[in-house]
Image (cartoon, rainbow, N blue to C red; front, top):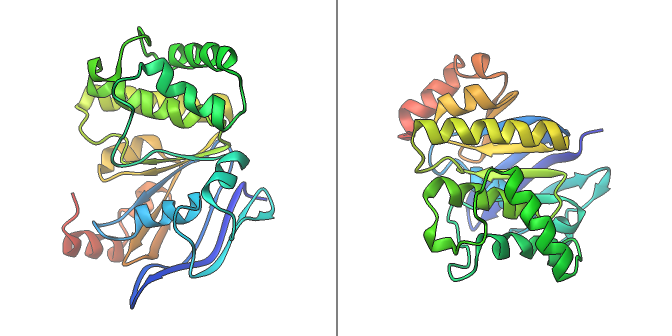
Length: 240
């Protein structure tokens, strides 16, 4: 049984099908790439999984439980975590305090427990001096903090929405290694939305490709990128 299982999931906005009859699964310890041209429905799919956006039809199950009608808070407590394309940390708080939020509100720790857990997680993420305020961080540190914040909720699966955006090649390599380490050590299922194919190739075990909200290909990276339908989608879709 997959940790996460979507069956025939669709989301309509008026006459537009942003997600169209998607079947998708994610298992513990597995890293799956979610790719496709701009506007293909990648972020909408994550919004459906995390409960931010309700499905129009289909079912979502987590560890065998139907969570289709469950809200985002309930799903987070079950163990569905995510990051966002636009990062909104609390700028005047320290890194440690930003990361503490999940430990307190999702895991029910008291402040002392949450502070210690935050320090340990920041150290594991390679974030030095977590007592600094967020505005003092460089972009790599902000990305690490965003992942740490998502991990502080205690997820069993985690979706990363363009977490590599804005990073240079060396920084990207560091985050790839970090995500692989997290997935392996925590037996965490990870879904990765990403435009850079080199990242998908290095990071993922398998890939799904979305176009106009529908999955047009799935499988290992080397097979998917040779798929004529995928090539046509990218050449016609203006993707990076």
